[in-house]
Image (cartoon, rainbow, N blue to C red; front, side):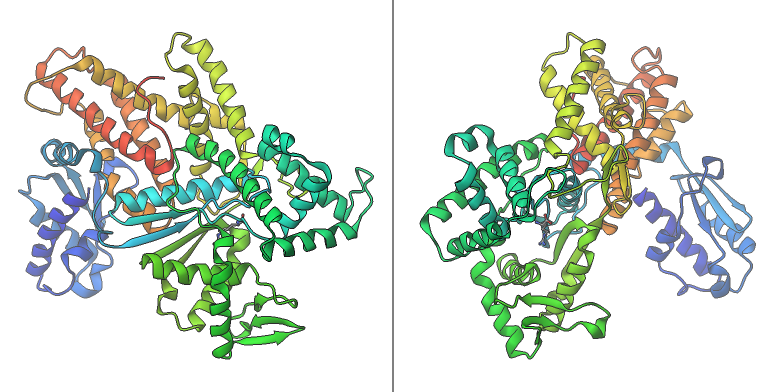
Length: 577
Ligand code: ARG
């Protein structure tokens, strides 16, 4: 409704002029003041006049009725009415048919998008699993929220760089090398892939720290061995380097399968290891600026003035830490991409880490510190059970997907046994169900996964909206060419077009709040409005040529909007289910 808001705001600005206060509010401000009333008996848009009362020195009721006058005769307005200090506005059918539908067809695959980001670059750091540790459902958030934010920004015209900042460096590789040399061999990893690597990683952790439950005694000497192997790796030992590269390759192959299921591709896989030689310069800069303090042998940046614990830069033995690497990576990315915004998507558990090193970047005098954005999200549990890490008792993302895909395949076998490309569709629906369920929630809220709810074909789920999209395709396939003058004859036609008109605003809101769930919920609004229209308004069986043509056109408009919205939340569109 952006275009109509502008038109109405222009007329209102004239009205305000007539009330003797031409400077009181700009058209833009007025457009922003237009609200969507809670229910449609109050019209489609409303202007609350209370805020205007002081500047215009009149009672809200008076303002509402005066402004109501100036909307008479606007062809986009069907009806305007002043009620208790509100100006309620009903959009005209002529506007819905010509402007809303016209814009959808004209912009087509770009409808909902914009060029507000033109010429600007956004770098997004997301997914970023730690190699050799399990890629578990805790990573679902960073992976799908991150990718949604990338798609949303692209849709708004930004140049986007998706970075998978792989956790491909650190003492875990020392552990893995020890475990491999002790218990592993080439064939075993070649066959077992990442699962075997994770198994080895769990075994070595249990062996180092002990595991009472399993009756494994602690063997700290193994920890020393692991540190020694990692040190060799750091010094460039050929054998360890080869193993390290191999472990990463195997892990990446596995991640790619998951990314492919989600339709995700990255522009860069520069992981933590890439920044090893980029850190000393930043550490030196900190030292030169007098920002480093020695605390119990470690080098820190004191953040007491900002009510935060110190940011750790170097351990006692001089080795670097997580924040050190993030600072070096940010500087590198600024130089490499000259970003206007750098977004980091991680669990809320890392919020302090980001607040700390963002502050350090500011203290270092980098003028772009304000362009760094941390986007946190809540925890995930499955059927009420919290996730344990390290002990190996985790739910892997691929297993969650697999379970959903199998479940869907079973349901489809019953519902539609003759469907072509069954496997492909079961995968898209199963994975889509998980993603949709996950992204239905505000990202910061903790979420409990209930598989049954996610897969319910009749609930507000991924399968339901994918099915709705397929339904629009089926109507359009059968419709062929339709001609006739457009006319709206049913309130459900108008109601659907009004929902479709809101898409561009929802995209902007999702970007402003870094909140993909805005799109998920919007998709549900479209699906609900389309299904109401579909059930109440015969489309192809409508007798009147004009009615038929209009309903097919409305279906096409809904098809375009859903088709544009799905990829914004990693959901695949399928013409048949
Ligand atoms: N690898 C980290 C983890 O799994 C996430 C990395 C997030 N990105 C960053 N630049 N720190 O916890």
